Image 1 (spheres, helix red, strand yellow):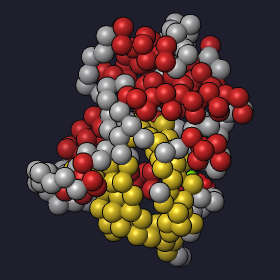
Image 2: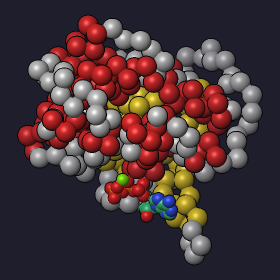
Image 3: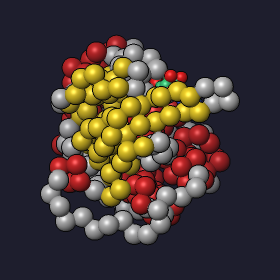
Length: 265
Ligand SMILES: Nc1ncnc2c1ncn2[C@@H]1O[C@H](COP(=O)(O)OP(=O)(O)OP(=O)(O)O)[C@@H](O)[C@H]1O
Ligand SMILES: [Mg+2]
């Protein structure tokens, strides 16, 4: 099913195994029950003192150094910074597909490192959505818009009625495109449909790595408007971008430079 429904990479990212799962597992055992009201634990997700070191044959790259941030529900957090500053590295760690070299990642209050492989996979399916830069990579080739959203919901383990799906597509200005397949949609429409698929089924966090980079200015504006409208769905959006308009629509900002936090609000 995976092979014919999506490109391998996107399928793996959304629903399948990850390098995180293949690596030696963290501390086994159930996640500790959480009774505290620490904002880091009650938020959709948080990173605490996260570091990431990539080791190649010849060198070590410190991609992230002591990065901390809380990602609240119903808010957009922009991750900004120049090329190579660590944005994608942070997003992959937050999406639980890569592990930090140090520090803690909490998703819905659960310390990701304490989860068994299956628990982590289940957490990812239920609570984390990831949007790729190229809109078409987020969608299944042959499915009409409405069915894309229905499939995304089922893969999250939730059945969503036609009414709810149509409401969501109406919010995104896609109600006249319900039966269109991805190739019958513009790039901006594809990315808005991808946003619908990302928020359906109430994940905690939607992570988007430069989601407007492939779009022209007008289409990018509509996609950003869509993210703003979707805040009411109660999801934490974390969006990386070079585009100052992303920072402009965000509620919070995390700016990185050479892996360090240089601005956070
Ligand atoms: N798998 C890897 N192995 C070694 N180094 C890596 C690896 N992935 C990323 N890096 C390095 O880590 C640093 C941060 O990379 P990252 O992709 O997170 O940056 P970015 O902010 O997303 O950049 P861009 O805006 O160009 O997408 C860069 O110096 C990069 O070369
Ligand atoms: Mg990047």
